[in-house]
Length: 93
Image 1 (cartoon, rainbow, N blue to C red):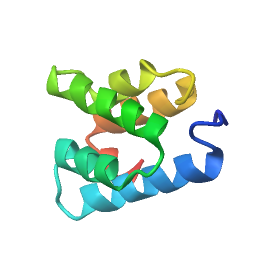
Image 2: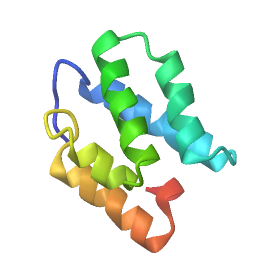
Image 3: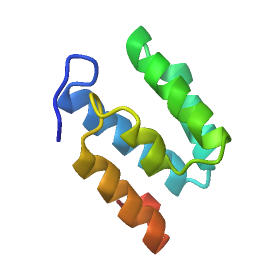
Image 4: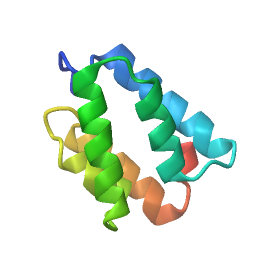
């Protein structure tokens, strides 16, 4: 996984863990991302999450939205998410 100053590994790991928890609790992806956005204290991360939410609202998959931020989300992360989307098991990725 890519480590950046905006989303260091620990923060990125926690973010995906929280996203998985929200999805597993039955919250839809858009709402889960909005919750994570509202809870995010880091202004630059909020901007990235806002863009991801907007990309999903325009019809893009989460993997596509993440891949639009290669400085934050590596190709490996985007591809893992894409595999989860394609298999219908996004919650378990």
